[in-house]
Length: 328
View 1 (cartoon, rainbow, N blue to C red):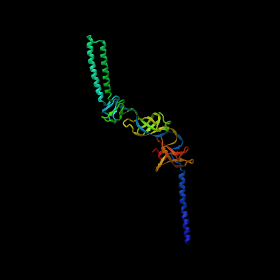
View 2: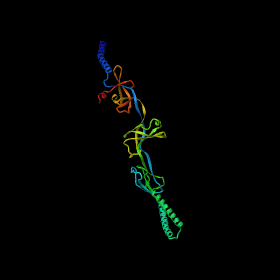
View 3: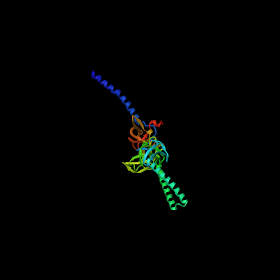
View 4: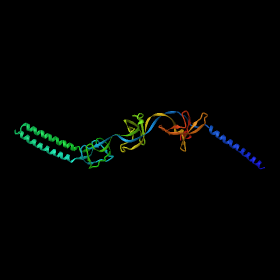
């Protein structure tokens, strides 16, 4: 009796399971055969710009040094870092007490020679001295005048003058310091402000004048010069960039430089969906069914597009996501 009841129970379980299995199978078949709606795109490789991350900083085409022209003591310095200068502006003065004494001595000699010349000329005019004596006095007076003028000129070179217009980058020699001829007292910017790139030497043949450069916070510029030398495995290039100034010379910026073109699979962003950090595209099969597959993507240079690196290939037909199809 117990065996008979167990057989009836098992038979009932099988009978109830059959309709449920049939319903489940029907639903799955409907999902796999339903054709996705929305615009479609045949995936094909196209040319795209190849960008390379490089090191960059804000700089000027050149820098000028404000130097001392005579030995002595830096008596005054009237500028600080960040100040704007114009060419020929006096920013300090170097003094040398010995030069002052020499100029005073030459001045006294010149005054004495002028007085002697006046006396000799008077006596010559009255027939006391010959012409040769007058010529000797005139030569002596001319010599002392020249020596006095030269001494004054050297003393005047104590003025520290800006050789170009620009902004002071460094002025770290304090007043009262001894200086020598040619010693840099300050450094100023010279020429227009640019973005200077330092690139691996492998890019030397790929970057040229006219190559585009993007810098974070500034926009797009172009290379104006590639320096014809390599230092420590680096190539240097200058870039004109809108919106930069010389207030922060030496500031590091994130930049990318154009290094040519390559083939890539580019698709509009409306054909890619993201779930839980994974990107998917819907590939349409020959029978019209759609299958979502995960893909590896990367940002593209063209706005509104994304590059597919793997997961889908040229020749696949993609369908836009429902969000993209509705224009949301």
